Length: 351
Image 1 (tube, rainbow, N blue to C red):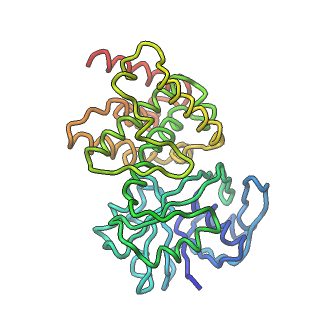
Image 2 (tube, rainbow, N blue to C red):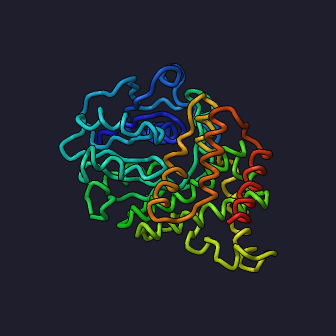
Image 3 (cartoon, rainbow, N blue to C red):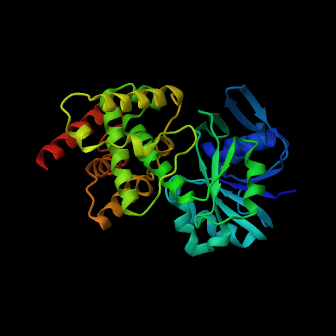
């Protein structure tokens, strides 16, 4: 039987652990403080399309890294805590065990120097979850996983990993994990970051035309940087075709909506309807008094754009705005989003 450890019981880690336990899959978790206490007392309070229930199941709760050997350690911590979680987990792996990155951002690239290519697998997530209270888990959208190695190589462990994750959602294997990871980065740079600034769920935000325009510009900048990095973007199941959604020069300059631009707005409206309950994990971090890890999303994109001499003014403005919110110099909400939109218009005019 596969020995599985989930490190981090926020929204994603909690939903994965709860769903596995509900299906009778033995799982151990690293959770601390109020989260660990809540799960021990009442189990996982899981809420999704099937309703609300309390899941106990075959679960072990640890407040520190437990000894192995573990076949898979699923790293479900925020991007800014990735190395902190990986270092104590690495020596507890089974001889053929692997760390599995679930983070947004370019997590696998960061772990390769620490662990080596044979110890790192990736699972790109195409669904959403939140943890509004300790031990309470809400799955906010359906979807599955894309799994693979960053080097694109075949690996028999991916079949075993897929067998576990299939309990949570459909799993697709990819020889282009880097392309899948960059596609998720581009989407998160729009969806998650604008969700922080707007302080609302995705459905409400994407009903606003100016927010859709910002999202299109964020993703267009991300596509340009990915191309400069030599990345072949790979579409994630149920998500946006980024090569198509990226704005053309004509669409950027159009005074009125062209047919193609209207079509792109229509796609984002449909995305907002499908993922209407999706709530930014960075917004949850902000509400808990933590600095939102924007530097690992839009900030990463900005840093790489500078290396290639590519202008990414909208992503730069988003990083500045989220840091201002974290410093309490601004507040999440529609007014802050509108100010961001107007500021990026002025930057375009000045350029």
